[in-house]
Length: 125
Image (cartoon, rainbow, N blue to C red; front, side, top):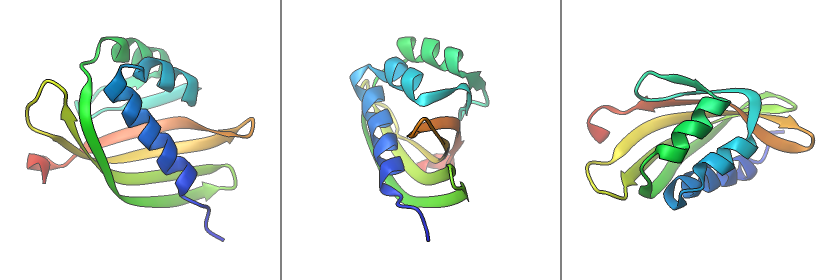
């Protein structure tokens, strides 16, 4: 039976909200596994501590939307959430549009982020 996608979508919404309100470093520091990696649209792969440090300095996002959510079950305690995100910087400029993949594992009864990848959509389409 397919797993309920809702808890993972809620985690993604909470993550994007933290990037808008300036608490991204704390949020991702608490949700990422110790060996987690983020592969970002600029081609950089960052480990958990690097992500936390970069988020302390990152400009805020002003708004975002998540659409086309899909769940890929990887096992009883692992799943990948794939979705399209459109995000707008608080300072203005064109939106960032990408296909996001977040791989979650269940540790200690809660979902933790193990791998995140952004794939930009050319021209924001």
